[in-house]
Image (cartoon, rainbow, N blue to C red):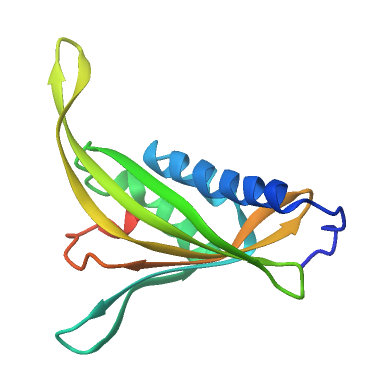
Length: 170
């Protein structure tokens, strides 16, 4: 980790900076700007999606990729069938902890909404919406190159039935 996080931020300034990274990332994902989202991450970034299954009494890992594997997955997106839905992520940043190495851990509550898009008079209109998934983001962020970057994210979902290809939208 770069040690250029030397300016003393107030607790409120630190919270605002971390919230900005989380909220900007959600907006990029909502707009399916996956490359822009990836730019908010550190080169060493690791991303996992997990859910606990009471059926097998253990945690399941649905996705566990480093940044390079995520970039490869994003490059293949044009070849995937996407349903054209609109997505809306609502993340609320909760506790923030500064570690001894100046990295920050943050936990955010997460709700993801899915809206079926109806095609009307040459433009898209929102249709029916549903709550798609709920859970939490467990993030670790580092300050490097003048910016806070996601170094690690684990999305722990309470929702366990998402459907094929859903890892693209969590």
